[in-house]
Image: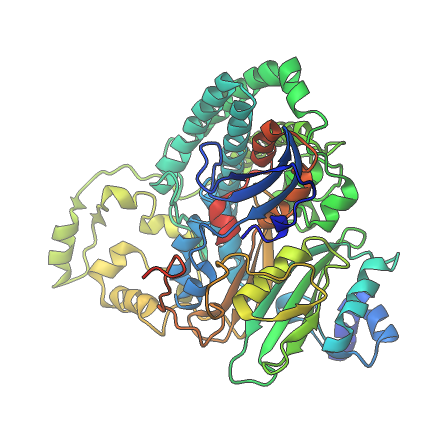
Length: 167
Length: 443
């Protein structure tokens, strides 16, 4: 009975994805009512592209890309995409795991233009490297800054010279 | 720094540096321009000059301590930021808040939205040479800020919307106060419409400048007035109604061309809708605690503390003037009844041992508010667009990760494209029309 109720709540996008890419979806959950899918890293662009370009879904607005550092866990990082569909009036969260040893993932700049800055921010703050990104540089910190400040092992009160070379 | 512009497109073009400290830049950003005479060939926008580690700081603060930091994100409409953060936490806690508090939040959010739009348009008008409009709009903002000041006690750093409700009830004379602010703002809007909307100089400066197409706007992640100026119907208040927006009657104005003029016009119309919302909400708001005239014996705080050593005083206790509106009898109307998430009334804290204990339990390290494990995203319609908070909780009293979806971050990433091919003189009004707020952009 409970399983049935859960099934009912699933949005059409989730159902379609489960049909089309059964091997790529690792987990489906609804924490606090937000539909969340955990996707295999290798096929993330394929799935985002499917969500964006399938006519009956049209998740055309990329709301956000961000990252969480689960230090001590393997894989360490979790990349989070929030996409929104005007047609379905629905928000979907897509997550994928990235390990510390291999912090590479395909860039989504080919799908959305705002992915450019969002991915630069994730690179700046977490050191995740996006393949095929046109301009992967720091965005909020300056180029000479060392380390990635939002990683959990970056000390809260660590100081670095404001201007490179100056003390 | 200027990486992209190292390769100039034309040999005789000029590189010009605008900002980060430029008199016309409201906010510190830097634009490197490649110019051919007055035309912008290429540009590169550099942000981050106001980065102060908001997200890192929040990871090391308790859920209550994060609240004042959210004031400083968009410092023209702090109340909307407060609401966005607080409602994300409430979503995780599953809190229900009293109806009156929801109405108060709605009214305060709409007042903030008008203030934000007024500030944005005032600056934009001034940049196109209309100084009178600037003065008029700032005048209207003062009337609105009077309401904010009398209700919250501060003009900008309000921290007024609290987890579980609001800090205090409206002042006694709130109806007259809000009515005055609404009337004055209406007058100013009418004047500004007269001065700008059909003004030939203003039209020439803004029509067809910095045009963004519908497709581009969506691809760049535009939300708010900038998206609606291109004709896309999307407003969080309608798409995912929160507070009491689904019970109110208002419209979402749309533009057509996505140029500077439409961004101006959509904001002008939106302010009128916000005024409508405020009027309706004031009308429909449920009654709060009845004002008890201070008759009979009233204890000064020191007398109350003194007499509480023997026995809990039965008389009414006077509160300090800056706690006005937080009297104990007002609590059920403005704050949730779940005692775990709210600060106990000051009358109890100073006169009873249970009040004192729950006060300490609330503020002590490791106690306080503990949302359950998990992650939540919640967004409200900020003045610039969808303002979303993404919070990951690990079950402790501090957020494991807090991320802000800043609306103007996405819009700023399109600035390079918007000013390309235009004149240098149009950069500043374009920049004004997207209403960049440094605190929110750089976090």
